[in-house]
Length: 338
Image (cartoon, rainbow, N blue to C red):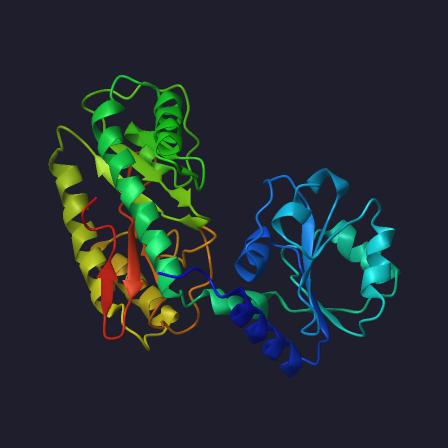
């Protein structure tokens, strides 16, 4: 299977620029830069990709990224931000990502009379529908996550939550991947905290444990949540049963042409019917970023998560998360064997 066709991606971006009357785009989100050029720097690096349609996109970075010219031939290493102005001056209107660009850089460019136009949604829109190569990378990331999850389900008891989190990250690195985000390991009543930060609580054999993990492989992410409990009681079995009702109903709704807000509405009605408070939407898009836009209407090739969460305040939380590929007629659960 051939890799990404960056020129095709760039042409689509240029066409979108034309519709907005832009003659350049300045990409500042590292995942956008990777999507359109293949270049990936360190997490703390700051760099841009200038796309004009006339020349090959220009990677703009600091001298600290002096390896960049060896990995991407059309590169400019700038010592000062003011040098960026000279590069941008020839362009009348430049699209930018209003969420990814820092306010300091935005204000600097505006003061220098660079005309910036919001364009972030259009930059990211092509990423919603995945190419076959991208889907294969997500499947590979899911495969690694399965191995790590299998190890975690049996190896976390007796460890603190923080130790379990570190063990999971170590397993990912051993398998050639990296954590897509800090693992969420929550035990006992702490399962009720949605984005719980693992702490020094020891995970005991009778505990309910929430394991929310994802790895990144070749740039693409997985994101899976499972609940583990050796001795489920009646209340937990009730939660699991209600979760299955909600999960199955949402999954049946995942079809091309379905509006995302319709699925949100379905979740809301199911929660209300079963007597639960809703804290977050049914899921999110997945790809180069853990959280991506899934679009207003589901399309074949989109990859989304389904993660309804049931939380009883100060007592317990129960969440199950699947990675789902929207195909031509329905959907495929990529994580059903985890």
